[in-house]
Length: 368
Image 1 (spheres, one colour):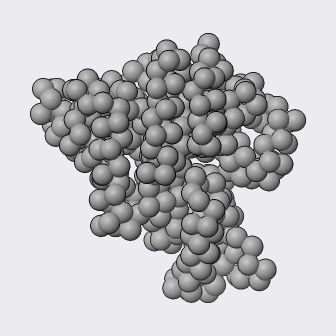
Image 2 (cartoon, one colour):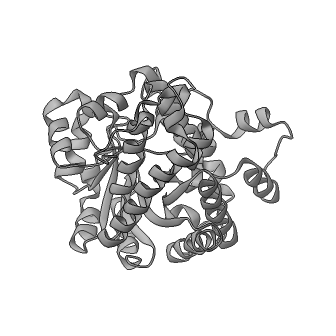
Image 3 (cartoon, helix red, strand yellow):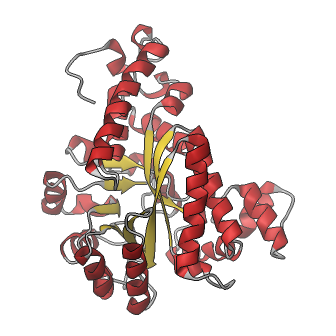
């Protein structure tokens, strides 16, 4: 945030920034998977109704159905989605999951949310892909009405499915353009599953002026990011952790203001980085990249929007000014009409300033 005027609170940093302040700061989450972000108690309730054995003990429940704190085998990690998908096969359950997710994010100060999911993975109970999208949209609309959070849907293809199914999803993303779907995505195992295999899907969304974000540089190297950008038309990159391995490509990403959707807890859990201290988030910020902070999968990674922001601030010792800039990047990178985005950013900047006054942060010295 560049206000052109120095304030003492600019230099408040790390642990000296209280949780209440971090919670109150306006946030945008651009990378959140619906099927990895149910409330634990909702999963327990819906799972029991579906006939799954639901241990009463939370630790046992998590051990049975969700990845551990470190799950480095990508196929095993992705396999855990089987359990959450099993309880999300009705319109009612999809609507509830979306409504609760948006409500929880609003409570953590999230003003704008983009929820991604693959509608074709929710058709086992008889729903069509279109009906699945409509159910999620109803849930998000209900949360917006009650909590004021604005939310868009990203329809997600999977690298391991047949390209014709990705094209079907791309068509769905275009059909819902302007009605609550803001982009098309491709997720799943990167290695041996290049994005260009689904090129017809990307051509379809690009030819209809729909936005594109692609998971890349998470489980494979910078060539995956290169392909996402230059073959598949990505407007944003999901994760992009390994971009640092190609300085020339990194400079291109910086120069063209291509946002990176960073997910710290998830990257640590899936062993994309060995230690958070090794994560390139701080390095990317210093290089001028437009990085954003996101949750990815709140249930799997056992995190929240506040938790991710707290983790970033503490790990990299961000100042309050750096923290505000990081959050502002999220709004700048949102798949919103430019006029709406501009209005939201102005409100965000005004709120940043008013929160400093409300919490009297100019009177607080580093370290509290």
